[in-house]
Image 1: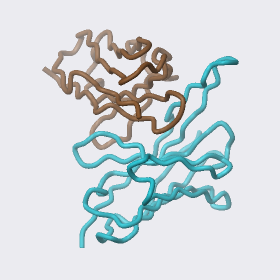
Image 2 (image 1 turned 120 degrees about the vertical axis):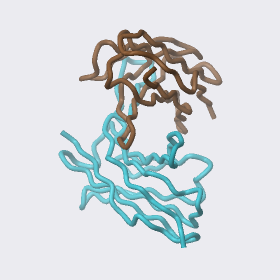
Image 3 (image 1 turned 45 degrees about the vertical axis):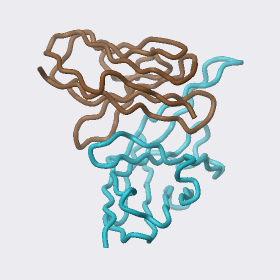
Length: 108
Length: 128
């Protein structure tokens, strides 16, 4: 199975900062990565699919990139509502489509 | 607009069977180009994919749970269900149902899959 490793596990940042979260796959998965945002007590929310495709309704300050084994999720200017936990998940070829362990984005 | 809602007992005894149902509203449960999934999250931990079912009833499960899990479809009630046998404390979690969208790109390329609609989650405790 393909393993997804996210870094860092947690990150402190301030409103207005530009932050980049990283996800690494255990083998090449082209661009078959999704990113999800989860706030406490809520279900995850789809942000990006196919590594760089913004889901409808998601603010344009979110962007994704990468291909092969290394992927990024960038938030260009942090807003108060962006403080949450972010998960990557691969969808390459066939299940199990595994999640990364998450990056918790906290207010500095 | 499709919505999902989980339901079922919040407390299950060890060694018994966990049974949850996801009710789909706003569209048929057996739509082509979509899968229906179960995902769980133990308290304070990350997300674990459990399995999925397609419109024809074909299922796929995560290897670590495959021997204990059954996902089924009830088109007459517009629902799909999850059963996990022989539960232990390790099965205590928030359980989510989620719709998986298949987004075709172009001929010769794998489609994109994404969990685009989620239920609000239901908490299951395992205790005697």
